[in-house]
Length: 338
Image 1 (cartoon, rainbow, N blue to C red):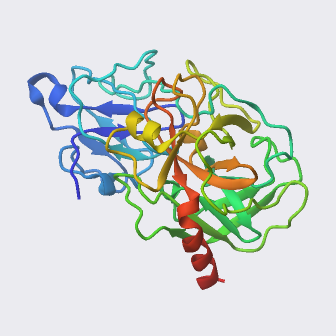
Image 2 (cartoon, rainbow, N blue to C red):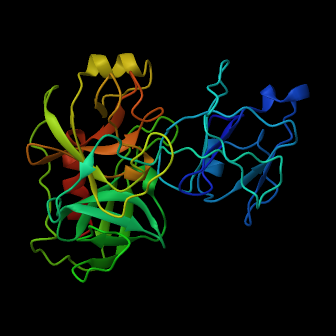
């Protein structure tokens, strides 16, 4: 289990905080993580697995203000994550401060929960899209069977309500189906550090009613080649600067990239279970608010929104779970849990 001396703390949808303790004056490493369940954790002592299950934690670091970094790895709202410190951090622009917290706590607004450069989907056009909810929308997913949803393993929560037939997530329009999860099954080889095998299955407590607003998407018969244009969808901030969380489902068309392009964008971090999609010139991308959501190519689910650095940044495309590698596992898991 790797240790980390950096924390990324996601306190709410539009907030990310990153600390490199050794960059503080005097090399202080006494930063403390405050959480109602484990208030005594020290930032220099925790590892990724120990902290990532604590939504909404706050990190208190003594003055002077810490260096702030911007990453998008991996995930959905309200998670605590860790990374190694980097020698030349990127300082976040447009920092705003939370008046309800001590002055030494920096909470920059990081608007990386979004599909950037996309458009509002036509209503009922993405009937396989689901919203995972635990009192708020936190991840997307795809209906692959009347009683099964696929999402990202990093979206795991012990209790999930699956919302199907959603379009405007802020309004009950009367056609939605809200069904609790009966089983939540992460891939047995999921690695929360590398995000390899970032896939999860949810069995619904009761089958969804299939209709014009709710229907399943096909699993892939084979992996799609580079250059294939795919449709990515989800809810989240639509701005690269500032914040605008849309009520309506957003769509983005983006091509699959070659494995060589993917590996060149993230040297040493891409496994055979990952695929990149997007534009190397930047400007269009998915992000954390879309985590777990679908990447559909030619009517088949080829990808699951997983991770990346920044959002819509040059040479930093989105990275997606390669669904074609998991068709056997999906089918075997469904059969074993029917």
